[in-house]
Length: 399
Image 1: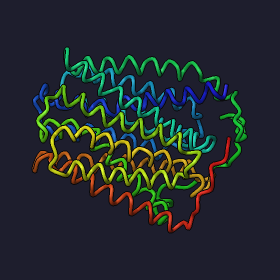
Image 2: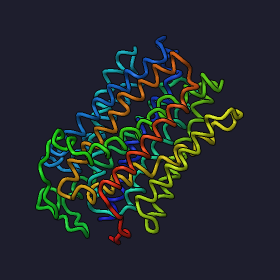
Image 3: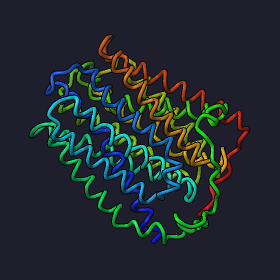
C-alpha cells in the first residue's frame, strides 16, 4: 500500500504540472483570438498566484482538519473545473474568474504533498516527485502545440481537462488508503496521532525571522525564473526569435523536458550528493545557460538555452523543500513550507507579470537579462542561508 500511495502522489503532481505550462504555451493564440494586448496575460497569472498564496498560507489549518488525501482530491477537482471553463470561455474576463479555482487548487496540492514527502521520504523521492511535476508541465505545451497545429487553443484545454479528470478520479479512488498506510517514519494515519507534533506559528511571526526570509527569497526568485519561462517563453520565441505561435509552443517544450530531466537526474544523484550540492551545481548550469541566451548566437541556440535553464534550475525547488524540516525543525515544517510556497507564488504574482509589461514596452530581448538577474539573487540568498545556519548536510539516510 505504501508504494501505491507514493505512485498516486506522483500522479497527483503530474496533474499539478498540467495547468502550469498550458496557459503560457496557449497565450500567443489566446490574446490574438480575444483581441487583447499581450501583457494582459499577466492578469490571469496574477489571479492564479493570489489563489495559490491564499491556499498556501491556509494549508496548515486546512490539512490538519481534513487530511492530506481529502485536500489533494478536492483541489484536483477544482483544477478540473477551471480547465474545463478555460476551454469554453467566451471572453477574456472569464479567464480571470476561472483562474481563482485554478490557483486555490494548485496551492493546496503543492503545499500538502510537498510537506508529506519532506517528512516521510528521502530526498530521492522528493526529486522524483518534482520530476513527475515536470512530466505534467512537459505534456501541456505538447498537447497545446498539437491542438494549434490542427485547430485552436480550446482543443488543447479540452485535452488537458481530460487528463486532469482521470487524475482526479484516481485521487478520489485511493482516499481510504491515506488512513490505512503506515510509513516507516511512524505516521499512524491522518486522523490519528502523528510522529511529529505540528507547532502553531503565524506566517507573520515566521517572516520576521532572517533565515525564513532568506529561504523565501530563494523560492521567490527561483519560481520567478520558472514562471517567466512558463508564461513568456513562447512570447519570447515569437516576438524576439521570429517563430510562429504553433512552432513556439512546440519549441518551448524543450524547457519542460529540461525541468523533467534535471529532476530525474537529481533524484538519481540524491543518494550520492547532498541537497546543498545539487542546488549549487544546478544554479551553475542555469547561469551558463542564461549567458548562452544573452550572446548574439543563432536562433537555433535558443532551444538548447531554454533546456539548460530548466535543467539547472529544477533541482532547487525539491531539494530546498526536502531541507525544510532539517533546517527549521519538523514541528515547524508545514508552516514554513506554507510560507515558502506563498513566497514562490508571490514571485509569479509580481515578477512574472512585471516582465510581461517590460517585454511589451521595451521588447522581449529582456527575457535572458531578467533570468540572469534572478539567478544571481537565488545564488546569493542560498549561500547566505547556508552560512547563517552554519549547517553541514549529512549523508541521506535510507528510509
